[in-house]
Length: 437
Image 1 (cartoon, one colour):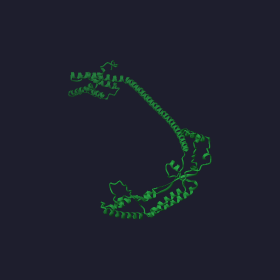
Image 2 (spheres, helix red, strand yellow):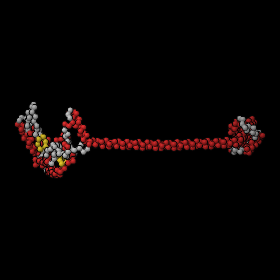
Image 3 (cartoon, one colour):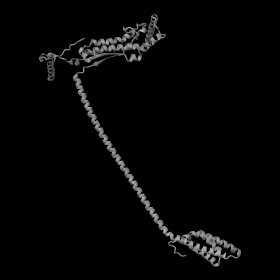
Image 4 (cartoon, one colour):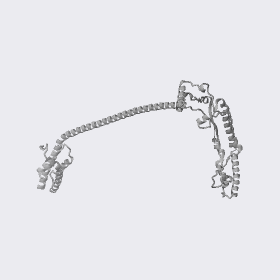
């Protein structure tokens, strides 16, 4: 069905405005047209234009069949054994052939034609909408005819699916049949080309067969690409587009506001986190400084305690030194006196070559006196003086006296050597220099 005129509701000039705004807009457009054309406003014809009937009482349908180009293939002239003339401006369009036998190909193409026929049967064509849509594919189907169209389209779809399944079941036999047919065509083409004097490659037949085999649809392509469907469209009016734009702008504004609030919240949270982190760092730094100060205080306290302990030790050592110093000086003075006595006895022994009686007596007294004054237990000096006391006894014979004098001299040398250091120290001035033994 074709229709270029749409029935409108009754009213003045077929248009009944529902509010005063429409009347003002209509009169404004009429006055503008009258001004531009230099005519009277009453002479301007008010032409009605209303798409509400198309919008409310039907829907636009488009039958879309895709993938059926797989069933055809364009052949080149050489594959048909035709040698076209060269250097000519005449165009020769190569023919097309079906890749499937007709008993399989036609059942696949017939449902497509039936679907388009059903669309044309139950729909209307409007040149105005084709101009607005910029495509003649969509046709207007009223709601009262949509059920019949859908039933017819469903039958066409079931027929196409059954035909496709038949092709898939006999796929190997179809491939062999098609290849055999094209092999015969290629052999005939080779003979015709040879007859015309053209140069024919040795693998001409196999080359044609390979081209056909590469173009032959696979099972997956037949199952996936062959589709028959219908698309539904509605009119999108300019006012609705403006409303959608306003809604989109409003929604965009809400989104921007929500994003701004989200950014503000995130910034606030970031500031709070940074403040808390800085507080934690400050607390950690304060704790660290406090611990360091406490450690330094403990170290200073330990140093002060160590210094006090050292001072106490030094004081005790000085006090002990003050206590022991008179005794040490007394012992040194005792050794000095023994050194002087031993030196005198040594000189008397060298002078007289024997130990005089007074000197021997003095040696014996010196040994007894040292034992009484030996408060530091000087064992070595005690042993030497003990030997000197024994040697200072009166010998019985002259030979023994000479031997005894030599021994006494050796013992006196040891005593002098042992007491030399203390005698030298006593010679220096000190607080016990006036001590007399």
